[in-house]
Length: 307
Image 1 (cartoon, one colour):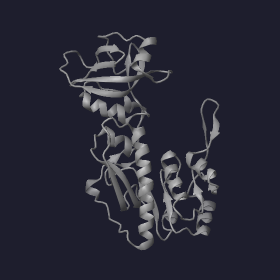
Image 2: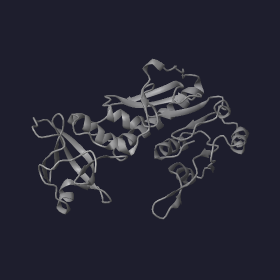
Image 3: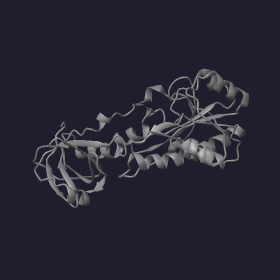
Image 4: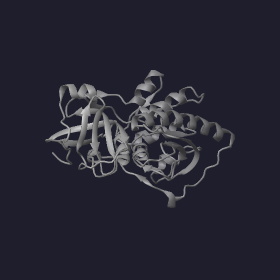
C-alpha cells in the first residue's frame, strides 16, 4: 500500500525480493496540470509495469475493499507513504502485521514531513525505521532501523531518494528476519518523540534576522516544496542552492550585498547567505548567472517579509 515515488522504490524492491505480491493498493488517480488530466500514482505505474494487480479505493475503510483483502489472507501488508489511516480491522488482519517504512529514526520525527524537518533541524544522523503499525500515528514497535549521515548540501529531494533506497533495503532485510523469527520488535520511548508536522507554503517565508546557518538548512529542507522565498519591491523570489558565508555584516538583515554570477549574497542576523539558484514567480528555476541576465537585482536593495 503506497502512493508516491518513495513508495514505488519499495515496491520495485519487493518485486525482486522473491515474495508473492498478491495486490498493490494506491490512492485514486488525481487530476494534475493545466489540463487537469487524471494521473496515475507512481506506485500504480510501477505495479502495472510489473504486471501486478492494482486497486484504488477511495478509503481503506470501504467494506468491499476490506472484504477483498480478507479474501487474499496476506501474511503481511507493507505500507509506505500510502497517505490514509488504516482501520483496526486491516491492522489486525495479517499474521506478520502491517509493516511501515518511516523516513526517520523513530521516535524522532513522527508525522508527515520527517525528511524535511530533519534537514531544517540540522540532524547529524538520519535514517529509516521499519515498524509494525498500531492504531496511533508512527508509534508502532520498531523492527529495524538503518542510519546514514546527510551531506552538508543535502536537500529534501536528494535525501528522499537516498532514504527511499535505504528503506527498501531495510524492508527486505526485515521480511527475511521475520521469516526466520530473527526480528525482535522494540517499543518506542514516547518521551523521546518529536513531531514532524505537515509543511505549509508559508513555512518558506524567510526571516532574514535569523542566522545564516539556520536559513541554509531551511532553504535546503524546503527544496523542492514548498520552497524558501522572500519579497523585493513587491515581487516574490524563491531561493535554492544556498551557502553560508562567514563574514561580519553591518547591513540590515535582508540587504543584498552583491548580485552577480556567483549568486545573491544577502545579509542575515548572523553572517550572510549566498543563494546560487533563483526563481521568480511564474518563471523557471535558474542559476544566478542566467537569472540575473534577465532581471537585475541591485546591491543594497533589501528583501522584505511581505509583498
